[in-house]
Length: 410
Image (cartoon, rainbow, N blue to C red; front, top):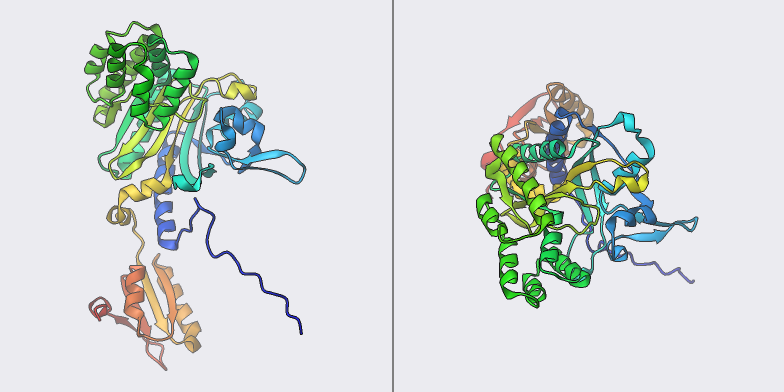
């Protein structure tokens, strides 16, 4: 008499998450394999870490306002845990726990999803598919050059057009704030607004003391291809932290120029990251197809010490979703060599179709079985980007080649 009321399911995803269909999933695997091969060629080994870490560990690298950045909850044992927000902190933890000083340097790479808190109003994804590397225990300059070369090589192999790698240094903004004689609170507000790209607010903050210095500061925040122009501007800044940091940037730029990679480089002194573990060189990847960063990285010499091993480190992460978007459909298919075909017939002839498909697959050709009506066969083949359709003639063992491409219209 009384029926239990059926609960209606929520037919949507939590904001910031999405589904991925087979075609895109395959294209993303092509991207990952291209990146993987470059990592392996440089002697990097793949590592995997748990998706969950103790919040205390994760927050040690995320820094202030970590509650607004992490997806956190209590596990069944009462511990506060968080989904990883990036892979640098888990790998720093792994290194501090498992690596001995005599094993250094170590070269790790990874493919992983990272999870970040975001408000619905911001419209940002809460899961980021990343591909990245960490070079740990190698001297600063040589390791910075190595990871930048690898980064540029990957972007070139993926045929990303018009990309630029912006170079900056964490100490330059800090030094400029000291030069402007900003108090600690104002300096932190300047950094926060640099992350938000709110240059109007930054101008308001730095104009309170000295308008002339403020003008120069705002000029220095503009990305610049000409390193000599920045040198001329900085000749008016008498601040040791700025001078030493820019001297290092010039050294890196000169090395990249000798490697004939300087065409991909911009100097961007405004770069500052939302994670607080960075300690030196910073870099970001820009592309005109998206307003978001394709990737970013830099030096984080003090992070691993929090987990026990005091060692230098640098690395970068690329956003696989944005790489996929930036490559464009036509370029993605240029990476594929798979031939694909359809084997069609009636369900009662299943074994005949399977045997024929096995013969095709033995030649390295993808074969998909389709049963039923021929009505939409041409459109199905077009959607799969198949090169051929083979149809089993009823009552026989004969397969005929169907020229479908002329029959798609109508």
